[in-house]
Image (cartoon, rainbow, N blue to C red; front, top):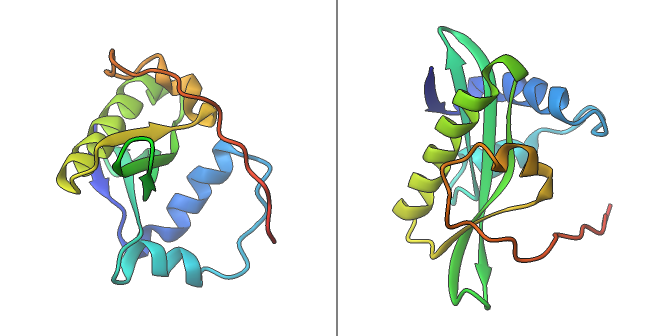
Length: 140
């Protein structure tokens, strides 16, 4: 199992893995924001692929936000998912990469939401505490 950062040529793979996890999302019609956030300065999102050999089996995506309650920047994990047969190992390895990025960025906390909850029990984060539920209001 290897984990590596997503590269521009991985965009279709990342979107395919994302659709496997969440059937609600329709097809992307414009990938401009996707590429801007992940690959253009200032980078606003980070993504990783977990691979077995050359086959991607999982992914994670995170963005930086600011928390007044935490008194600093926080890395917010938006997605953490791996195919069932690789879930335990891939999600743990992806989580380690996300946590390492949060530390490199100087974040004071790492956040994730209930959509990642099925993975949470398998993560090496014994000090994690539930601090509410994230609510989402569509604006478009």
